[in-house]
Image (cartoon, rainbow, N blue to C red; front, side):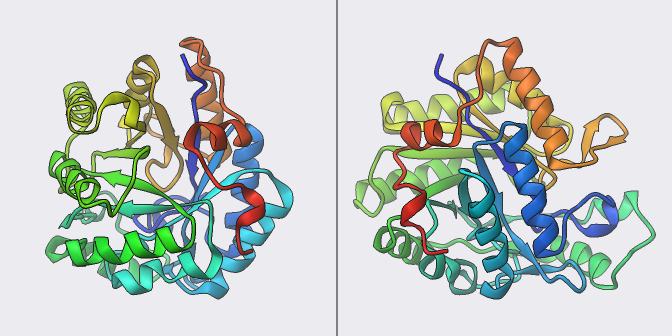
Amino acid sequence: MEKVIITAAITGAATVPSLTPYLPLTPEQIAESAIDAVKAGAAIVHIHARHPDDGSPSARPEHFRPILARIKAATDAVICITTGGSPTMTVQERAANVPEFKPEMCSFNLGSMNFALHTALKRHSQWKYPWEPKYLEMSKDFVFKNTFLDFEHLCRVTRENGVKPELEVYDVGHLYNLAFLVQERLIEPPLHLQFVMGVLGGIGTMPEDLTFLKHKADLLFGPKQFTWSVVGVGVAQFHLGAISLQMGGHIRVGLEDNIYIRKGVLAKSNAELVERAVRLASEFDREPATPDEARRILGLKGKEKVNF
């Protein structure tokens, strides 16, 4: 099988700081955590930024710039920046950093959905920052908006800036949305799909959920027209990762999606989660791809063509 691309999602916007003391929050912490994840075997780092004073999600360029510059200076990693931001931001706010920084990759969410985070309120009662419980409670009554007009905006900014979209699939309807964009030639194959599984509001984490998504993608696009990776939220991170490895897919790990290295034991870093992914891959004779090998597999423009 092809080498496995391991992506590390460093901080995200869904994990609030009080859930784990190991979540990187400042630009310096996020950058150093990403660098350590690359040293551990990640080829791609998926980057969100946060306000350094209280750890809340941020789309501000001044919060992204030092993160991106530090990672680029210290590693050869592929940097994939978010256009998901947080559910409270408009698509223009979420995507503004694409033309600003012209990264090799960015995320591209493929459908509007409930994106519920409030279950964390049952597991935690002490909060480091006042915004955290309000943010989680708000998610009970929030729709993460990704409309066809939003898609057109993202298609335009990725195409104009030579950025490969990482196509986030939270449910089967998102594949049909993508099929329409391909039909209209707004997005051109080869595609890179990221199956995001286990968000409350999207598809679940049963093995048949993953095999169904992969089969449906094969039917819609043809198996040679896309590469794919899987994100399992929480405990499913490594369960679904193992299935993806068997099926020839790639995997994403990281504190954005899962804060535990094993049941009840907090991961102390993103690097620790990457190290476990590397060990798991070795059990299936899948060697981790280097950043340059990931660029070849995904057809990326190269580190020298970014704007940071």
